[in-house]
Length: 271
Ligand code: DGL
Image 1 (tube, rainbow, N blue to C red):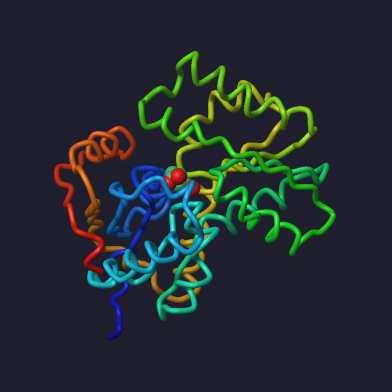
Image 2 (cartoon, rainbow, N blue to C red):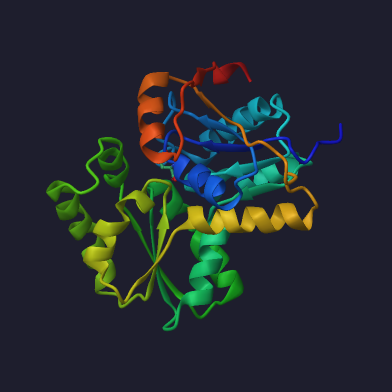
């Protein structure tokens, strides 16, 4: 069936983190509608195997297709690293992940060819950021560091807490010694820690936000395919989760620029 340009974009993540991507889509592509799915029952993805993440991603894609989405954004870095190629090959609508747009921006902006990347264990172990960067410029040195405590700290709302600062210092000191000039915030939650990371890394390091870069790439992709929502389109955001809706809604309301009154719970294992 032919999709209309005003059909929604499906955006999915392991939980609340992908809302940083949905927020950027809303800022940069204000006429687009979004169906967001957060896999709150099975989060975190960052410590799970590739096979599991592919299985979860396929189920979510099947669910999003029931909403007639015109394109899919894999907002989760771990799912982008592990499952993007698989789902892209299986779908006939545009699919975009967060890894390539983030990596591309870091490549374009590095002057000393030393890029740092922070993310979940899964994202760092997959080495997909490194692979992609080296595919474009093999002379760039890429230094990865997993920061597994960042996600729970963000979800506890401890964005500016001294504990967060202390932990960030421990994770990032190692990268500071490596004279990187660009640092990719390679996890959905990390842009929310930007000011702490900025303070520790200093002004000389360019912080790359893949959520922001992904919204730009998505806009370009939709334009190229003639799939942008028309100028009279009224944007509509709907939210689905696989577990408790209230916790998600509270977090979402602290991130999104509009009030979210309703979140729907679905059984993702049925898909
Ligand atoms: N959304 C995940 C990511 O960007 C972080 C949270 C998780 O581990 O599931 O990799």
